[in-house]
Length: 287
Ligand SMILES: C[S@@+](CC[C@H](N)C(=O)[O-])C[C@H]1O[C@@H](n2cnc3c(N)ncnc32)[C@H](O)[C@@H]1O
Image (cartoon, rainbow, N blue to C red):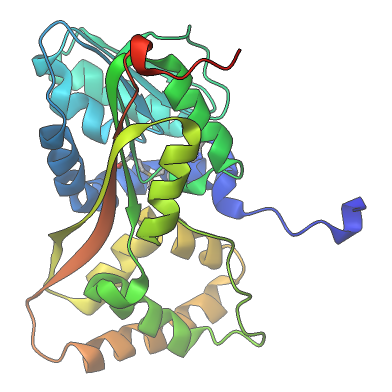
C-alpha cells in the first residue's frame, strides 16, 4: 500500500485534536463522563497500597476520583494540554500521589508487572493500534491485577448522542455515505475478544447507562459541545465564522424541535469491559 492509498488518519488519534478541546473538555464534557469513571472505579476492588495506571486520563477524570483510596496513581495522556489540565487539578485538589505524564498509551514507559489496576475511560477506543494498547496494558499489569475499560455503545442506545447526531446531520449534510467502520468496541463481542486476545481472563463486558446532562437551553448545549467535544471542535475548524454561525442556527433549531420541552435529561450508554491478568502459575507456558 502506498502513502496515497492509505486510509486517512483518524483525527481522534492525533494529540492536537485533544489539545484544542482540553479546556472546554474539562469544563463541559468531563462532568458528563465522570459517572462512568465512578462506576468503573467501583467495579474494581482498589486497596490502599495499590498502584494504579489511568491510560488516556484526559483532565484526570478517574485519577482524581480514586487518588485518596490508593497509594499511587500514574495518569498518562498523549495530549500535553490535557496533562496540563490534569496537573492543575492535582494542585487544586492538593493531591500528592497522582503523577500526570505525557505518554502514548500504545507505548507505555513503565516496567512489566508494575500496576495493581489499569483503567482506560473512553481513551483506548481511539487508539489506531488497539491491540497494542490492550497488550501494553496487560504487560504493565501485575499478575492477579485487573483492567477496566469503557467505550461508547452504538449511537442508537444513547439519546444524548442521537440528539447531537440529528443536529449535526441537519446542519452539515455529508455528501458521501459513511464507510463501514472497522470492528469497534461498541460491539461487546469484539470488546470481549480483544481483551481475551491480549491475554486477560475473567472477562465481562457490561452495558452502563448514566444521565449525562440536563439540558436547559439548546443553544447553551450546542456551545458547550463545540467548546468541549472533539467531534464538533473538529467540524468547527472547517468553516469560517459566518458559515459556522448559519449552520449552527440550523443545528440548534433541530435540537429545539427534537426536545420541545426543556429542561430534559439525556442519558448515554457505554460498555464497561473488565478483565484480569492471570496469576503467574495460571499463565500458559509459551515454551
Ligand atoms: C474522551 S477523552 C477521555 C478522557 C478521560 N479518560 C475521561 O474519562 O474524561 C479521550 C482521551 O484519550 C486521549 N488519547 C487518545 N489517544 C491516546 C493515545 N494514543 N495515548 C494516550 N492518550 C490518548 C486523548 O488525549 C483524550 O484525553
